[in-house]
Image 1 (cartoon, rainbow, N blue to C red):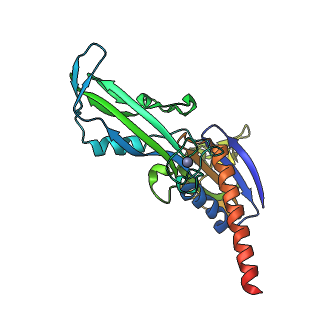
Image 2: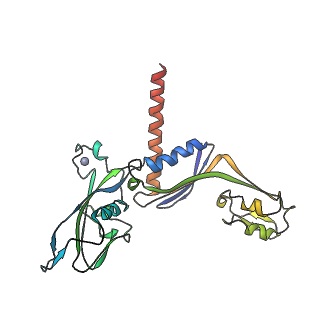
Image 3: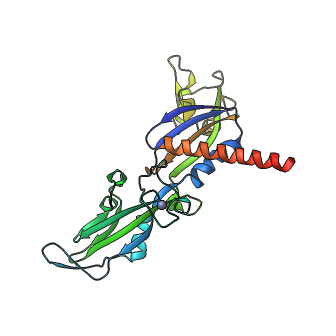
Length: 279
Ligand SMILES: [Zn+2]
């Protein structure tokens, strides 16, 4: 198997995986979605009753939304995660009580009228874990309303709940192979225009050519809308374009590294168990 990194941005990656099979590539997709962990808010504590500001003005700890809805919205906010630092709570040296190696604490202290955003989640302690997506609206507060919240984030995986799924878009396709017979093409420009992904274009000699092979998603719109037999679109069964994006809690590089190590561990575990069973 050969992996080529075509694009590696902060939260987005494209890989070309050749000499592989769909089930192997799919195992990487599944691990990225379901087994790669991130931090997410698990417990939210709401201050009840009256809240006073520095000048002694009184606010009521109320808002337009139920506490459960606010807690759910906070849980879906991407929390920056350092996978080298954090442990799963049940596997942490603290024995699951909660310590800086498995737990992150946040506070929200806002007084209306205002809109509370994800950026109002202030980490208690290390400022590295400030939420990067600062403008996710959580709730609106009216005059005399206030919100004082303590929230606890822990590590989990997408297998448990979608809030612990760091990878959002994740998928693969066969690598395209486009064959053009220009003798059959009568309207090259018209043919090129049928491609919604702009994979085809016309060269100086007015011939229909492939402009961007990897943009082709095998929709076959060109095959159906150009002269019969002029274009042939196939997918290479041993080569794949693999794309994924993260929600910003992990970088694309960290998510990929974790997933590949996870797969390697699982496969060696499987090999060991199998060889034990055979003996
Ligand atoms: Zn701990």
